[in-house]
Length: 86
Image (cartoon, rainbow, N blue to C red; front, top):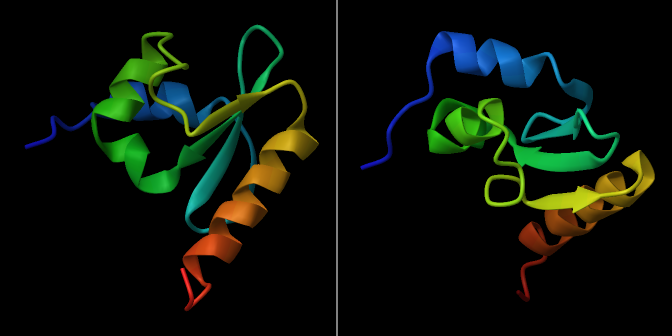
């Protein structure tokens, strides 16, 4: 069973949100200037805790150099999820 993130950890992660393109995804602006895709439900579990602690690589679905790159990833992930042939 997953460990939940604390309210303090969730607040820290939410302070990095720079876009919410869908109700399922956040785009984070990381402290080093990169951008990351975070599945919204990941905020409530151990991914939220890890991101709050600075572990982005293992907790975000994608880390990119631009917001556009991350938004493209999210659009493609949503399209794949909604494709009945996949």
